[in-house]
Length: 277
Image 1 (cartoon, helix red, strand yellow):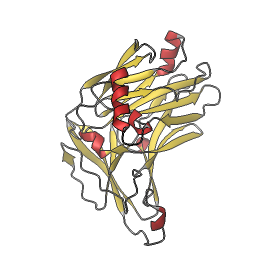
Image 2 (spheres, rainbow, N blue to C red):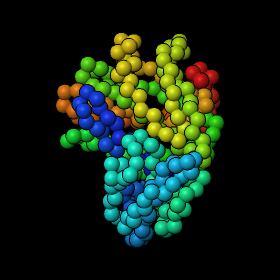
Image 3 (cartoon, rainbow, N blue to C red):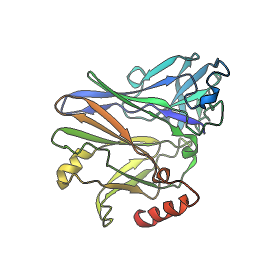
Image 4 (cartoon, rainbow, N blue to C red):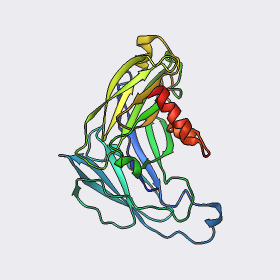
């Protein structure tokens, strides 16, 4: 499956009068190949990354990068002429042929060289003062075509010590058609009784950043909460920052369906949706 690589947002932290900066690091070598293929053939392909943002309901190319075989390429949001929060997507291609302005986001080239089931990934980075945290991630092309989908996740990956840590939930949505930018209601709810605790507005083709430490303060409850939307899918990221040391940590969750295997997998998924969606 081909993938896009979203460049995460910059986040201003009022309490520290400083900014968390987002970037990606791309390694031009297939990091999802099977073990038996490592020594069979030397990898020699160049890869080009076209960086797109949305402008006037079109995807606009703002910069291209060339990455040679086996080299690292870091792309920092702060080095680009963009705002802190607007959607930025890196599109990988095997040639330097990018359209300057296009309604539907160009298809990414597959970097796959065998039948490994692992997705193509880049390092999604956040830096703050002297701290850096990252995880290997991607945005599957298939997800960018799903206008009607659902989202179910939980905040178990937050740091529970709310007196020592700020927890930020980042929801990522990328849709191929740049004109699709409608707002979506997302609910925090109690999984035991499905009672909605709080709702907030997210947006398609956007990063939505929510300081859930404020939610914890309001309800004085550090138990695990679930999140849901029956209109739109998101990739959730949990970013935490220590109030004492200013150290960062980042985690992300997978769709509930990824926790099931076997021939009856979809029966379990349907049961989850019936229970909580």
